[in-house]
Length: 173
Ligand SMILES: [Mg+2]
Image (cartoon, rainbow, N blue to C red):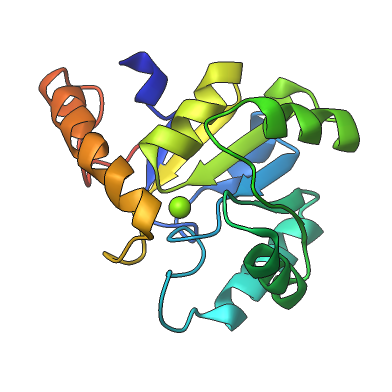
């Protein structure tokens, strides 16, 4: 079950203590896209995300969108938010995480993944020992594939809760 336990759990990308990440030696932030930064349907708060990314870049982080979604959608948001991206990452596969390390020259201890799903973002990061940060999904609506994942996620959450490993709404860093 440890593979699903994030290193940090926060309400949203706006409540994460990024200074603490710097202290921990994190230099590269991989942001999941859907339901982490933007909803699947409906209008995202583009201005707020852009401001956050500008702030993080100024702080010295290298910021990427790191999404399982297809190229077209991810590219559109990367241009909007003015950051680079990796699309169709196939999380929880290690492949794309390894690609980032190789292409961007970061080590495992310098990367953090921030996402809303235990089965993709958190499991994928934990597999390699990358710092994992879970946030609550910004919308209740999920994509077709995520709906399946949520079904299992609910059961995993229940078990994690029973073992006092992760409780919904009980944030930590
Ligand atoms: Mg997501």
